[in-house]
Length: 383
Image 1 (cartoon, rainbow, N blue to C red):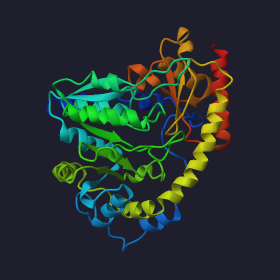
Image 2 (cartoon, one colour):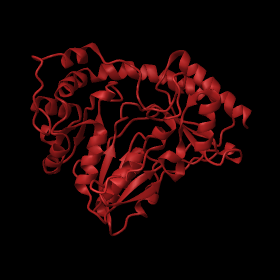
Image 3 (cartoon, rainbow, N blue to C red):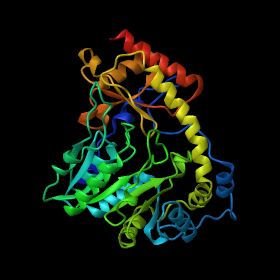
Image 4 (cartoon, helix red, strand yellow):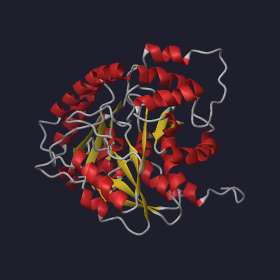
């Protein structure tokens, strides 16, 4: 490595995610339950919006075009000045965490949880403090919000709490009363929050309650087009929060990416205009896949009963198999090697994920059925 150019402490703090390192062993034939990337196509209205204009794509204002911000604001029950368009939720997370944290701060992050949270907190020079979700038991699928577990980790240095609802990787949805109790406790302690709600349209059991419906002033909500509208690579997300905070964070966003891609901003206007229609169609597809995935594991005695209340992930409890495999990473590698099936080890999402596999039902048809059959056969063979 060059002595002149050295990665900063922030860059060195980013750890490679387990999902990416494991995917390096995939083959063309591998049945991929690893990525949270939908396999459906964008709508005709979105296609037309992307192709509009005269072929020129100038910069928009840093926070997004007024028209696009107004469209997202109407969709998110906000004012346009409370909206920033971002290059997906990932960039929104970076702006929110790096723009709100100082070195020495502590940030509460879920365990298990999406690895970007911990990494971005470390990149800000802050310390991630993991709070456990309610762990599953043989009688309860768990992974709900444990308010006391979060509150007891609040200290003098706590700056923010990161929430993810519905949850990746657990597929859980937060109970509305517990969520309200947590937001009240955080505000009383002077702690802000960032709520990643990208899976808000995938709720299978009970209603979804956004943090903004409880408290609009103490935090930021992140969402986008990638999951419901199948526009992963278009990199269009949004941040919604108090107008003064959006204004203060916009210069940081500007120096990271200038603005979200202008074709994607036009696409966002078309997408949210047909949002309700799109959600109905998408949910029908994924509800059927959810049913098939849950049915596939009924024949196996897992460590706890599998459940998917939200998102499109099943967090399979394979703790009984750890007598044969030292880690779930080892188990996942064996599954990839023996059955050509890719899943993500639970410890890639934090220590609480040990003994679990994340299965993303983002593939359909014969591949879904064949992949499930191979997984079940593998687990039965190694029991």
